[in-house]
Length: 90
Image (cartoon, rainbow, N blue to C red; front, side, top):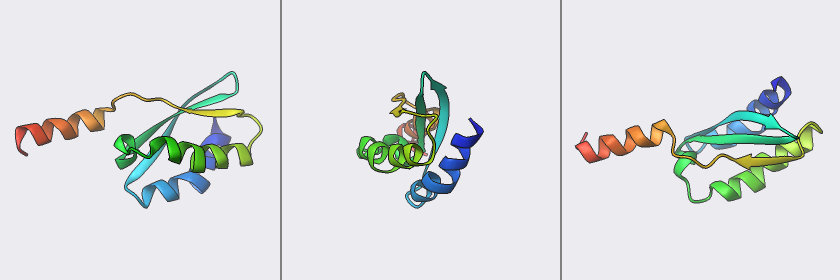
């Protein structure tokens, strides 16, 4: 997983941070890297495009350990907290 983190830090995170986002590697199982998008990227309608055009492309280019990258699509705690603040008027 160390190699994956290095790839994400060097090639993926800078592009996501420019838009207020981040990425978290969850696990590699059977050659598939599962990731979560964080921050603004977690609720972005273009998340699947970002996965294909940036994340997957960079990861596959820089390692042969991973054969595919998949997005874990779940509501993050950040998004729940954001929604609670909006609904409570804060």
